Length: 171
Image 1 (cartoon, rainbow, N blue to C red):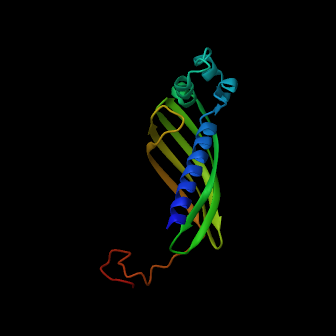
Image 2: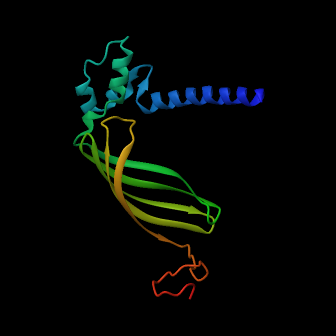
């Protein structure tokens, strides 16, 4: 049991360290100097002076602030995996899309993507609306729709359901 406790503490400590490194990298905070301000004219104008060298709270606010994105847009590329328990398969793929911020807290997006793995996969597009806090790392609430074509065929002749609403099961 002592081994489990030590392992748990080790994992938590290192996961927290890794999480903090990811947070600092994702937020643009590199040595407490915002690398994002160097390349984005809107952000650079907003934070021309910036927080004082020892003002860690000010630096954190500056690194996380995304209020300057109103009216901005851009392309994105994302990727990931999906697991389908029903077929015990993993799909991998990518999306390319465009996102527009009419305000600092609301975005509109559209993308095309494909995910494939083994004998199944799909290709399609999605559109969405998202509302979030005006920060770089924040949860969001959204509404979206996806339309895709798949090469997977799933027969419904032995699923124990009335699939066509005619009061007959597995016809």
